[in-house]
Image (cartoon, rainbow, N blue to C red; front, side, top):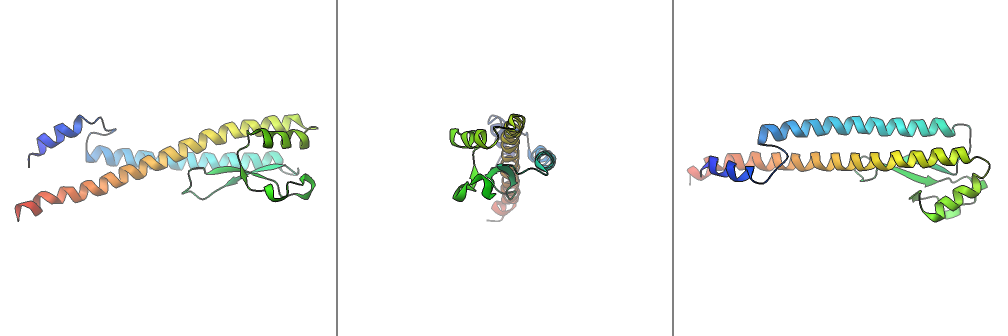
Length: 160
């Protein structure tokens, strides 16, 4: 087995790293980025809660578990005054149905509706960045694990 030939072949693939050391560095950078983005998600959630503190909001941000593709989700309020009934599940905010509900219940507070839409912009982008970073870090982790197994293979093959 000629490692230099294999490494040259690997280099033609255009991977986002040049070897195992670089892959480990990339993984640690992605994990640090995920942690930073996760903190930003927490801050966004806190900022939304500060915005609606003392008000009865028709929607609220909810943080799902870390292993879901969409960390931050919108939920319709369960408050009886909005009469959403069984609709108090996770929703995409920018749908005609939800925007219509929000326009109706926030007709006296258009500034709050504008702020909610701005939060949705941030939520959308944070969710993508978190999902992408988490997935890419796990892919590299799997690559490293497989490579470590492969690395032991030449010694095994010599003893056959």
